Image (cartoon, rainbow over all chains, first blue to last red; front, side, top):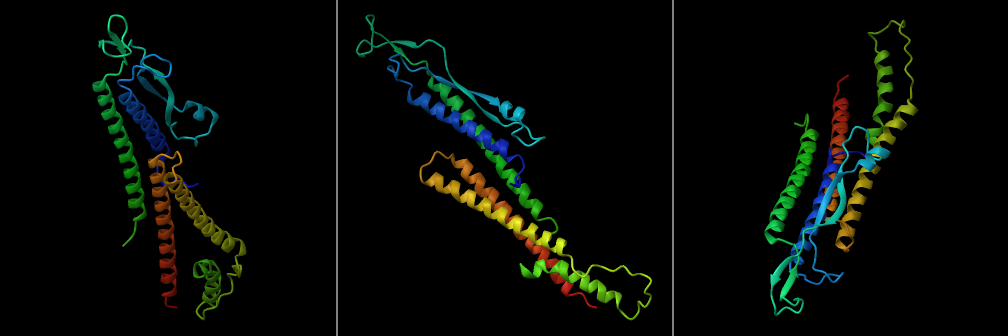
Length: 143
Length: 113
């Protein structure tokens, strides 16, 4: 396959990774008040960890001379303790009337959301730029 | 397609006609050009055919990813759009190559002998 747009593979991988990050952030926001997760405990915030696709580079899957693209290494749980909120009317409340709420901070998630969205935008700008570079190149010598 | 692929076949004929022009009487240059260049012309047309089929494959893969996206498969939106862009740019490249070839062919046809 001809590589018509320069560096588009890495940008596509980064877009994939940012897409996953946006998914995880939306999951965190959606579960900001989930006191009863699948394991019966309050929901724990998920964090995405990125890495360069070193494995591919070492096995020679990528073309020689090209930089390894990034990929999602793992999706980890935030190990901070759940927030204790006094809410005696909640069925999940303990003897002292305290409810363990998820360790999701909406403000933190919004800041992460902005960051992920801007990074996605930046990668889209790279795609746009690569396309306009290719079109400019094709117009060499046209009259 | 046919006028383009016939360009390499025309040029040896032209060259031999030029050599037989009245002004050039000296036969000391028997640079007998091959009257036909089968390997060259076939490689040129195969190159062109390869390019067209490559562009076609790219168009088809882009159509596939758009179809997959619209039928609810787990294809990210940007992947479909990027493959569309790639297909569009390689099609532009093919059109550009065709334009240049036709231009040079017409330039040769306009040449006065």
